[in-house]
Length: 429
Image (cartoon, rainbow, N blue to C red):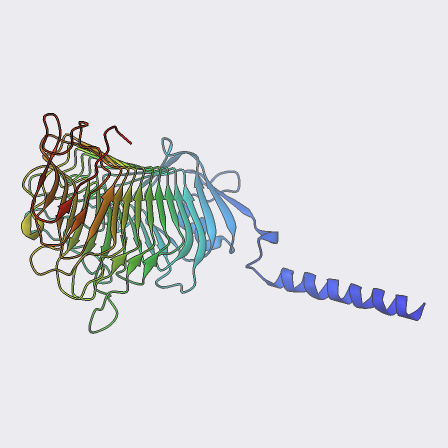
């Protein structure tokens, strides 16, 4: 009997301690609240989104009613910011730095932020900027007409923050994940910014992010979707920290980088300075059409870089432009894997199951390392594979447009040395 009473008392005390712990932790979602914002600040709601963010506890939800809000909303705590819909709820950041800034740079350890249901327009720099944050969801927004501070005459962006180390020529693009990890950008319409969506390591390593089901179009000065390894802002050497293990899937990226002086691929995977690292990323099931540079452009521009083990699989690629500068290609190009003149070897690249059409060169390669490509449909107007370098290209089991194989009537061709293409497919995969 005493044992029963003692056990019951212990259980009760444990329950009280646990409840007290939960009560004292503002991090617990058990007590999360919902705050509201509307343009008039009526019915107990806030009139400004920023005021609601300031008043919110961790893990609260802020519901923003239809209307236009002239703000730069800075988020430094876990919360969900939910608009009534991107066609009705607008953050107009005219004259301001950003529309929404998820600021993990000044709030270390920031996680679990959701931004959804907004139209974000007219920011000087990014429409939505995310730094040093994990588990962010940016979903179902329209990001349009941002990057207003860009000076196209000299390729600069006056006032862009110093921690954005190589954003001077594009003001950071529409959506920018800098040093983010395990985050998702999904279902957004991104158009008429300088560039579309950017993942970079300016402020920390950027990895295990997913960019999916976005429509990225008509961003005139830069790529639709960019993965870029940049100098790190916070050490003397500026050694990059790496962009890796990200997935770019099920997006439409079209008509980007078409302005005079613009240069934009459908998807760009780039390394900048020595030591830059951009590896192990997957580009899959995207539609990449009519961009100013190739549908997928991989560039190494300096020695000592890591642009290895990237995978390009099951994309539809058509009608894109030629590459330029030190990664030049001889005409419109679907995929360009290129270490330029003096860049690092690009190894472990896999190109598979893509359908490439309406290009002068379906796949261009310049690297001393081997590139593996198979089960692709190479349906362009001329060259199926152009090896511009000295490394081997393993191009067996591809469909070249006719059963007789490359160089036959109705088929695309092979150009350059060390391209293995036998056996080929006698019907499309």
